[in-house]
Image (cartoon, rainbow, N blue to C red; front, top):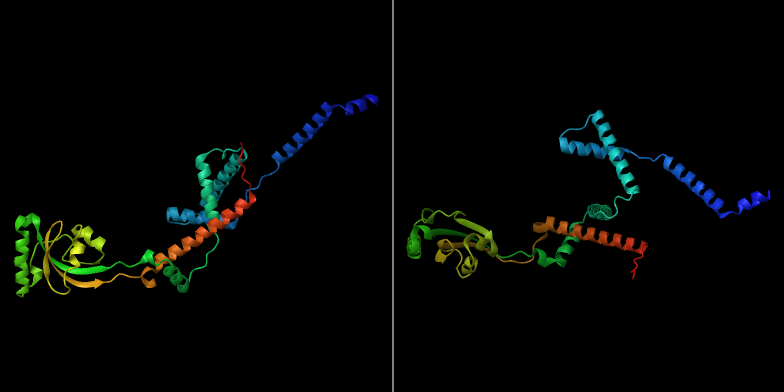
Length: 271
């Protein structure tokens, strides 16, 4: 008995007993069943994905194979996480960040009504402000066909138009057609060269004028319509305003989610 008491007080014995208990608990934990749950929602998602990729619904055998493949992947993913294989991997880190962002956005956002969208449009009017537009018809005299005589030939055509000749049968073919617009300054200059839209500003509406030079030659022009710029109507830009409003709500959700996560963690600077 005295020897047993001395043995019970030995630190080595204590270490061995604690180690044996820990080993036994670890073995029990490692041998405990780990559950992979396959619910109806998962099966439905796998069926939809199969149908999207193949154009037809999976058979019962194919669906079971999809579930088995998903379960095998899930087992490998969980084992990899348990081994810490996700740590230090930049690509995995990026994907996890994306998943967290999707998680922050997955909450439902109520569909905005027209009053909400109109208020958003009013608060950001410059983003959708309508630019001035011009619609006009022109008779083209190409530099490649007429050379240095292009301007003089255009003036001769203008005299014939003013004398009553139909302009539809005059001039050279133009790639963009005889009628242009309604178009903005940028769109007009993109078609006819820099500065053409500015030259149109001094032309009276409703009658043939010119010639007006372009990057391609000379043009006789009749301005048929000028639309002043200004705030856009909701009916014209509703889809874009809705998209912008929803994106703003998603960004608010992302910020709120990040604020919530920050409160759970403490960031410390180490020397």
